[in-house]
Length: 180
Image 1 (cartoon, helix red, strand yellow):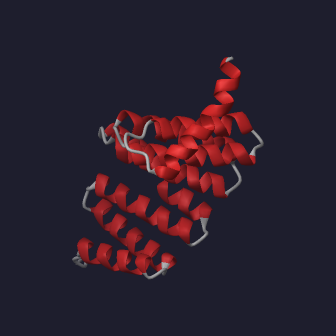
Image 2 (cartoon, rainbow, N blue to C red; image 1 turned 90 degrees about the vertical axis):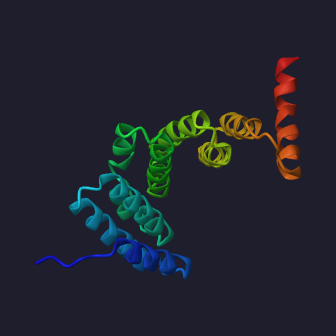
């Protein structure tokens, strides 16, 4: 006889642990919820929990385990037409790859995620992803690529705040010199 697991209780407990900074414990709770959903044939919910587990493991500074947790969830979301969730899975995978020092692979995943966020109208997620790409390119000493990625992300904002407006205008200065 199998134990009747209440996924919402597991999830709420994991979220509480996450908010309290108990990231490894949160990751374990999300993993249990994912397993439970998977055994019931609820693959999409299991994939969402795997992504939550990945985020918690990233916060716990365990990038290889985070990468293992998120692996394949992007494909499942794509097959189900869940494009924004696919982008989130790719961004989670990219963050794990980045933390593992695999910069080029991370940039590729971040680029795919950015395309999905842009197509889905998720401007904040798009901007955050472009900032991640910019930071990676900056660390790789690709200054023009870093500036372009940041500018591209900022250009998508409908209502930028003061800091974003200032940065957007500053980033246009090199472009104006090139166009002369």
